[in-house]
Length: 492
Ligand code: 5AD
Ligand code: SF4
Figure 1 (tube, rainbow, N blue to C red):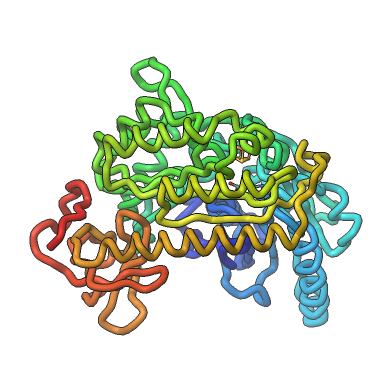
Figure 2: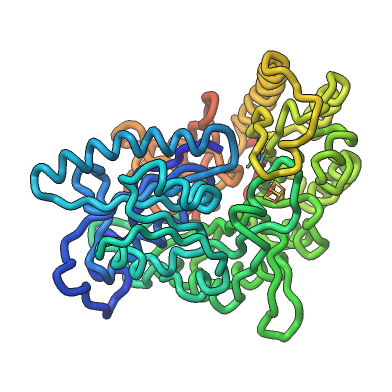
């Protein structure tokens, strides 16, 4: 996971797309909003919904910060120095705001996301350039907050109202993408927010609040709208997505497995993914969905954080390394081509060399197609922050390097193992060079294919002909196009 994902959020750039039937607020037409997104995919999703929510106010998204009348930093607090990064960005924006003011243009600056939730008033105090501070559960109220800020109020909103957010956030419109441009073929869909797990290193339960699941009807309606816009792949998002639960139309209690079955039935949706999961919440129905639903891609991000039982306990993960091994075996039994990705933390307080060896051993035994790894960073307010036996920085660096080298080797071996095999690829956009398109394999690697742009939005059968560190090369082969048979790893 990168700390800074994207600059502009905007699927609301086309006038009339989102918020149809709502006239712009008087005198407000033509304003531009720029959202800079840090952190996880949920922030990417939220940034898009914020932009959508502002369309009725006459805003449209811009890629250029200099042109923006409203600049929002959608922040992340998960690891080190998050707040400091935000303050230094605000220093730059202060100059931009002053320069725009000289040419008679008003600029509003907002801080959203988990740093806003954690810091609240402190942001407004330290950075008076900021007009509004609002936490992740308040985005549905953004139009009202912007109006209040425009009237000169210094707005700070950090209430927890997830259900209200789910009810009110505008969802992507079903209007077709403007002619000549295909809508995105792959989209995020938030189904759950917050977390009750309280891992001792993690700030999420404090910034995103308690676990709340979105209703089945809302999720299905949004999936149908996305599919109607040409989306073929949906990634369900939640901080602890496999804790999602709801009441099905049959009146029974549903978990993520049942939800995946329902979404697999949505016409046009051919690929389903979900992230991020906790090993304790992989129930039988979800494991069965991996076996039974060809739409569920054989790629699973399942963080374990550490391979040492002692450290897992100190982290309050509430599972052992053996539980993890058994779980992976069960999922792979039904889906032998499953590839795994993971998160690891090195240097959690008290982590000895033997604990770290256990983590390396777990990686050897499981084999990962990719992994994100981090040095432990104490987050204020979490139990980990007050634990003793800090691991020296130099030791953390060494461990991180060693772990990353092993994962890189495994990733290379995994990509190499695909060369000469065939699989389906969802073509997403133009490729690196003219005459090429880029798509995603079932295992999420980018794949460069020599083929025409008219294939964007299609699922095509390819043979993998080569690989680089992070991507694959392929050529089209006849036979399986568009069929969503189990992606095959058969030697061609
Ligand atoms: N220090 C280091 N890494 C962390 N993560 C979460 N909190 C911390 C922390 N305090 C990592 C975990 C998590 C990922 C999103 O970020 O590995 O799975
Ligand atoms: Fe944080 Fe994930 Fe643990 Fe929840 S399950 S506390 S989000 S690491």
